[in-house]
Image (cartoon, rainbow over all chains, first blue to last red; front, side, top):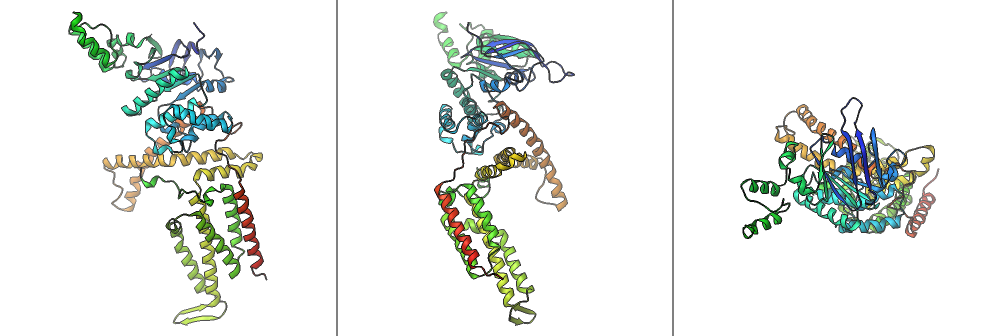
Length: 279
Length: 267
């Protein structure tokens, strides 16, 4: 297999010597063009992983490498170019006075010439479907639109890794859908390594792989379907499975044997209406 | 979003004045303010008034916006006029009625000072009416750039200004939200003695400050994550450029200044 874009090796982290470990001996790899969802309850260490990947924090033990380059004080500025991050609060990461200023912010920090910036602002805003809002001020945008601008401003410096750290947590269902749709498209077209960090299991169904965090350790890792089949255990660590999965589990309890673990409504529907013919 | 959300007094437009480089506007206005104090007779004042009115009309800003900018200073203009009217006892006595004794010198002085005020306010408010706050910030950053040599944090200052401007509407929305939340919990802002009403502001300010600090912390992290490391090696999207029209304005203004100095009375 090709070299991983991200490698986490036996990483342990704590905020302070007197405090308990937030991450305990965590190891994983993420490859190019792969969508990995990291889920976990509050305090499970999932957001700490994001900050470690961007060099906002440094681990006490273990090593983190991006494209084989270890993250340390010297490489951190290069790493931040490779790893783009979108945070939870749409307002608190909007730096510019207008949409185009915000998209330009990351590029300005890297001294990208003006003509190039103009070009990339157009491209990235088109890519997130915000092309018409170039001169709009942030307070005239919805939360979902602001988050799409945040994604555009990260993409403008063409990173290889995109991390969404609970980026949809403060949005309404429509905004959430907009973001997930945008991100899914981008990941396909730009071959990004995409990491979505969330406590909402609805958002992991589209991922290629799911890492479940609990109390600073990797609790489980696998395909969304495999993870969801462990409904009861997930609930024990404070995670709720999506409605469709829960419904399927209840149906099975009542003696209706389904073909597979359905993730989407359509899948369950298909299983149900073809059920009789297979009996 | 309501109209309150328009920051400052900027009136969007595409006039000559709007298109001028903000540095040109600031420079010209600065020297205009200085020159106003050199005017001392009919000719020099007329020149300045014509210049101010010309700029006003070419800005195409509706008169009512300009008058609105003048409202807070009407009182001041009238007050100084009256002050001069009553206090200055120069020239010939014009009015002598009951306790009123007005002298010609007082009237002229009063008018002159009022015109001075009027000109100052008119021209400076033209700056804020035709220039976005962010343009003013850019201009300040450019104009203070030489101070970088003496380690004055010019870039940081400009960034602070633009971030505060960016967060004004956000914090206003937040204030409204908190005040509603507190009102629904029984905090009364409108009635009661003044002391009580001032006290009622505390439950509004405390959450506002707490959230502002939280925002600042998150914003700092987001900026760092996007590679912000100070002003060094940064490029800029918005670029200020001196165009032909700016040079034209400078020349025009120098002529105006020359006329003022030529026509003012000396001695």
